[in-house]
Image 1: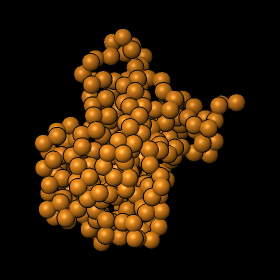
Image 2 (image 1 turned 30 degrees about the vertical axis):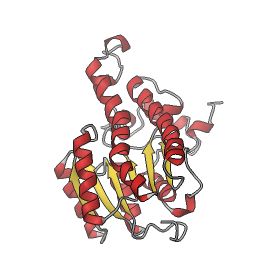
Image 3 (image 1 turned 60 degrees about the horizontal axis):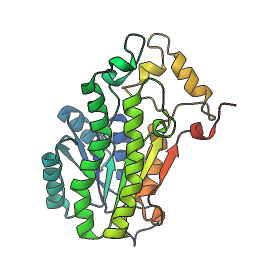
Image 4 (image 1 turned 45 degrees about the vertical axis):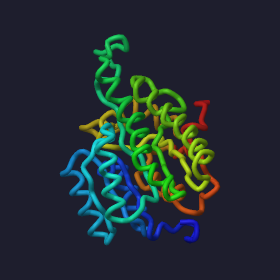
Length: 274
């Protein structure tokens, strides 16, 4: 990877957990168009097939593997499959994650009534899933002596958002883990293995669309308007906004960047509200 042009991903092999989701599939398209071979991991086989068809239509080499980020054996089997198919693993994007209604407070659910199972699900898929995937795929990077891991944190890790204590806490753990792992692999194994994260601001996804937009009118909900009012650029993010930042973090042009969490938030973190 080090001999490639600064922003070229030609010939690299990149694994994306949560690769069939809105954000993961956009990242896959962007890095694939820059020459990478893309491996998509997700639990939903139908969604994987649809994402693969989209990539194939763009002449992007891809492989899909059904796997859960919470099952170490499935992740290890997936890593072996990638190496058998392509000979190496150059990059890992930990994009699997999300919130759950059972870990969300509201008019009918107080913080004190949040069920343990809902909180565990959110913490596990966001944080533990990132750790387990980094173990399974990162081990091959250690053998190679080089590689890149990009985690997905959140603005909720910087300033906890109301209603979602599990998600905010899990993403804060992802940011902390990103810094820890960057130092660990550089000192213990190879400085050519880099670990960074992106911290998205507010993007419209299938999970949050109708928390931010009124389903009938298409107007901002009260929560959506609050977010827009605190985002200097005055809009929600688009998947391409994340994808271009990810491409930079994967490419040789960011070779001296590790242990960072990059906000992609339209200025949300910089604005005090005054």
